Each structure stands twice: as C-alpha cells, then as structure tokens.
Image (tube, rainbow, N blue to C red):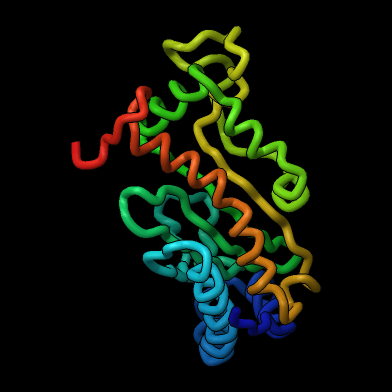
Length: 227
C-alpha cells in the first residue's frame, strides 16, 4: 500500500484561509494554495491506490475549494477544507467513500448520501421484510470499533405506506445510510493515515455488498440489472 503524509502546512493554510476568506487574500496566496493542494492530492491518490487493492474504484474526484454561494447565506468564497470522493465501478457496486481534511474537523465517511426515491423504497421494503443481516453487520465488534453507529437523516415518524409499529422502523425511517469515522489532526498527519483510511473502508465491504445486492434485485432476489 502507498503511504504519504498530510503536513502541518496544510492545516496552517486552512486556518489562515478561514481568517482571510476573501478573493484578494486568496489571489495573493495562490502559490501557497497550489503547493498545499498538491500535498493533499498526493494523499488522496495514495488512498485511492490503497482502496483499489480491495475494491473496484471507478474514479477519484477531488472537490474544488471554491464555494457555490448562489443560494447560500454564507458568501465566503472558499471552503476551509480539502475533500475527495471515491466512486465504485459499475451498476452492481453501490455506495461511495468520502475523505474530508479540516483542522480539528477531519473525517472519513462511507455509504449512501442521497438514494433516489426508487432505491430508497427498495431499501425500506427490504428492512420491512428482514433487517437481520444488516443488524448483524452493524453489530460486528470490529465494525463497531471503527465506525460506530449507522447515521443519516430520516423522517420523524413512518414513511408513507409503512407502519410506525414495525420492529425495524428505526431503519425504515432513514433517508440516508452513512458511516462516519473522525480523525484528530495528529492522526491525519501520521504517515500511516492513507493506510488506516483504506483499512477502515475495507471494513465497509460487507455493508456495501449487502446494499448492492438489495439495490440490484427485487424482493424475490431476482436481478433487476438491465430491466
């Protein structure tokens, strides 16, 4: 597995940007930004290469530092973090990975951020039928140690067509299915960070395999790929 490191300068730059979040300062410090971005991209690339050893990743996308302020009350033009996503390959491999680097706010995440209404209904129908396999995965001690609980937004009561008395209503309510692992600054700067992130993502595979199987079959287990 590849290793490379986030440097202290990455956090220094982001902290200074937070205090000077305007175009004039950013333009004057563009070379510093580019140098810092290069370091971060090398770490993202290392994570991508590491994850490729245990998953089929279609692409690595590093998100731009420029904010879209058109519909936001916050008009600061720049993000105060670096982030990237890993997209899995093909229609049969569902789910995605995310990396977020920010002073005192770094984390990685994996899961399903915005399932479309068809996928969300299919997932809810599965939990209505049987959620025991998912619960077994989430209860695994190693999984729990790394990722903790399944998170994500949900509805307050029961979605339309489902009973609020269903024993799996805690899962049926969810609109997102997200796992999050936080890192302090020291851990992010550790040379083993890229490897640790990859190993954490590797533990997500049983969850992704289950969800991918659900989203590519009907309730009878027949494939819906190509239909």
